[in-house]
Structures are given as structure tokens and as C-alpha cells.
Amino acid sequence: MFDPKKVDRGFVLGTESQFGLVVLTDGNLLHTEKALAKLIIGCVKSRNMHILSNFFIMSCQYGLELISPQDVVTACIQMGWLHAAHDIIDNLESAGIPVGITGYVSLLRAYEKENKSEEVNGLLQQIQKMASTMDDVHTDSPFTINNIAEVVKYEMSFSSSSLVAALADEIKHYNPGEHLALELNNSVLFFCKAKMMEDALCTYKCMREQNIRPTSHTFCHMLCGYSSMDMHREITMLWGEIKRRHEYGELDLDRDLLDSLVLNFLKGGYFSRVMEIISYMSKHNIYCDKWKYRRAFLKLHKNLYRNLDSLHDKTEAQSKRIEDVRAFRLWASIK
Image (cartoon, rainbow, N blue to C red; front, side, top):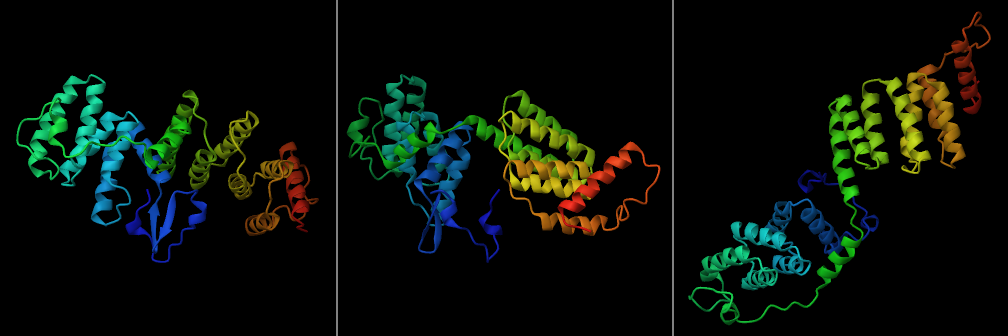
């Protein structure tokens, strides 16, 4: 997870590549409404409003509050996410950050409209408890749903805000499968870093069983895990799976992934697979760094089969390997 406190002083972020998620203001990188909308939707869908509340608490502490919590509460109410709005109010209230009576009243009216009597009674008690600390309340009498409008100095406007528009736009493009894929990819990454490849493979199979498409990141994580343990046979099987997923239209080819495969097969001496991937890259018009592979070969296998004609009584497998090495030498212009 990105932690601003651990960023090096020379860290550079290209804002033009962030697709409208951040904006540079007075030397500070600040989130846009689009970024906030993505965060809100992610928290609502994962039922983890604590993260969103902590975001507002930290924003208030650092003086970077671009939008008031009240506006977010109102937007959630207008989107119909009443329990999410209530969670935000409770979390901010616990942190000592005022939300304002209008947030409570808006939520109360929404609960009443949906005939949620239990929530209405609970919120009325909560308002009564907080009334003494609210500047916009001018009564000490008990709150009821009938007199709530009389004790508030102004009515809450339900006019649509730009945040509501951003939420409505983002929710159209929300794909729960993508978010679940991200979570499972993180699990794969964890297992691969810990060299727990059986668990990583089980997680991958779980993705397949749930009809969640693996991404290039999934295979990159697994490739790095296998590579760190010199499991080249398993990398061969992984390459076969990558080809199948691409042929089925479930995976876009990634140059970095194919590049890493070539380097790993060069390291393991799997020249047949090296030439196969090089041909695959050429077929799909993917740039192939010949000189990088040439340097890797000379570093690892400089004298391998230097005199290819000096070997006698070769087995069929040896003959095939020699042919593959010869083909690579010819392709890489190695004499």
C-alpha cells in the first residue's frame, strides 16, 4: 500500500498519467472528485467505511480537506447508501469531528422515507445526545420525527451535487470482478514473495473456479515466485497457461511478461521455449530486445556448444537442443 511517509524526497509522480485522479495545487498533490468517488464506492462495496472515515480524519488533521464530510454524507444518502452514511457519521463523531445537524436530519428523513423505524428511533436518540454540542440546534426538548424541522434553523437542501454526479458516473463502470481480481492478485503476490507457490497456485485455481479472469499481474507474480526458486519446469507450464488464456481471449499480451519469460528460459537453458516466445512476440508485433537476450546468453552460456559439430553419438533430445541453440545464435548474431 502507498505510504506517503515512506516516499523518498526525490520521488516524482507524473500527474498527467493519473487519469484525473490527482491534481497539483500549490505544490501539493490533491485528490479529485473522481478519485474520491472511486474511494467511496470501493469502501461501500467492501462494507469498510472505516477506511473512508480515517481518510477524512487525516485530511482534517493535515488541513487538506477539499470536501466536507457533510457533503460526503449527503451524497451517500442521495445514492441510497444510508448505512454507509450512518457509519461515516458515527466514526467522525467518535473522532470529535463535527458533522452538523443537517447530516443527521437528512439521514433521519431518509430512514423515515424507507420506513426504517428502528434506525429512526436510534438516530433520534443519537441526535438528542449530540444536540448540546451543535450550534445549529436551538432547543432542549426531546426530538421526534414530527418536530425535527422546527429545531433546525434551516432545511437541508437535496439538490444534486458534483460529487453525486461523479458517484453516479463511477458506479456505471464499477466491475466487482475487477476488485475481487485485485484482492486475489494481492494474495498471489503475498504467497509468491513468501515462496509459498502451492498456495499461490491454489489462489490462481480459485480465480478460475470463480470465473475471475487472471491478469498479466497474476502471471507476473507467479513467474517471479517460480524464478526466485529456479523452478523452470513450472515456468514452462505457466507459459502454456498464458498462451491458452490469450488464445481464449481472456488475457492481453504484456511485453514485460513475455520479456521476463525469455530471460528466465535463457537462464534455465530452455532454448526451445526461448525461440517459441521470440516467434510469438514477432507474430504479434511485440518489440523483442535482441541485444538484451544476446548479452544474457553470452553471460550465461558463452561456451555452450561452441563447436556444435564436435558432438558425436547425440541423442534425439541433444540434437534438438543443439538445433535450438544454433537457431538462437543465428537470430542473435552470435558466431
